Amino acid sequence: MGKVIIISGASSGFGKETAELLSSNGHTVYGISRRGMAGNGVIGIALDVRDVAAIHQQVAAIAEQEGRIDVLINNAGMGIGGALELATADEIDLQMGTNFMGCVNLCQAVLPYMRSARHGRIINVSSIGGVMGLPYQGFYSASKFAIEGFSEALAAEVRRFGIDVCLVEPGDFATGFTASRRNSQATLNDPDYGPVFKHSLSLIEKEENSGLKPAKMAHRLLKIVECKRPRFRYVVANLEQWASVVLKHIIPGNWFVGILRDYYKS
View: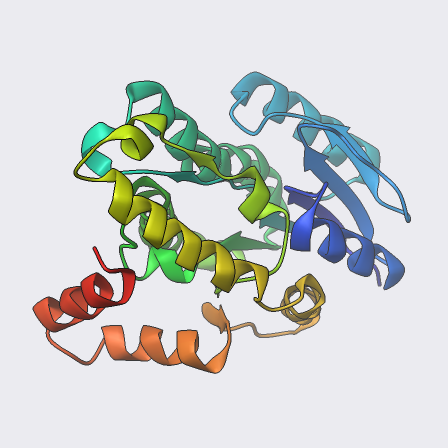
């Protein structure tokens, strides 16, 4: 039986691939994005995940139309690169508001319907940047760390209602994320931070552009949607990045920070 699924960030990258793959496998898919792009069986909804009132209105409309909401995939996200010291209030609000509060807003809108049905699955897309603080992507990492803590607490709170919470930590993928990253002009122009930031950024972009194909993430999300007993956490990355996640948990913290500092030449 096909599931009723809401996925955010559905207009590009593995959000788009996932939405289309889910639809082709018999699921009813509502794809949320600021552009509201639809196609290949996906019902597109133009929506900013920071707009709380609009989110609740749209989720209520979907629940009324379909009679239920089975799965929520929180995938919407963006990145702002730059030194933490020089980040502006607007940059911080945009980064945290899109990545973290967008996830919170959709969860809070969907949960009453899942709780009433005593059934549902929430899949929150984090990042390996939510496991380790990446230099010059500090607020991106902070937003993903927040999703990690939020998801752990949420999983404990809603399991008794028959609701599963899953956390997915992707590594580098070759998507439009790289081209759409916003970079701090103040950091680029700063004599202390600028040269190191530019070097770090070139390394980050090279790894992203040579990263995994979005189809790999889409197929993993399809499996999580359709499996009976999902795990709480999934790492979807190449071997080197997967190993770095394992390493983070087994060596002293100052050693790991030193490895990051050396790797990014920061």
